[in-house]
Image (tube, rainbow, N blue to C red):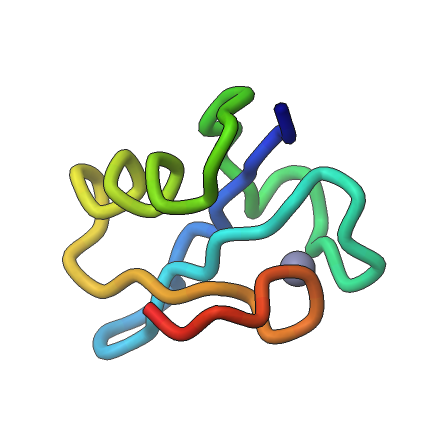
Length: 66
Ligand SMILES: [Zn+2]
């Protein structure tokens, strides 16, 4: 299991990026929403997509394209 966070998008047309808790590029805590601990990034992605219309994976910790 891995812990996932999503960076809340600021402004219009900004993608909400899903990160692992271990990401070296993890943004400021106040700009993050904790998604939870999941076996796959797909689950975290779908959950984040329930909050934000445009979601993508962080290129540093989650290479897979959304
Ligand atoms: Zn990341």
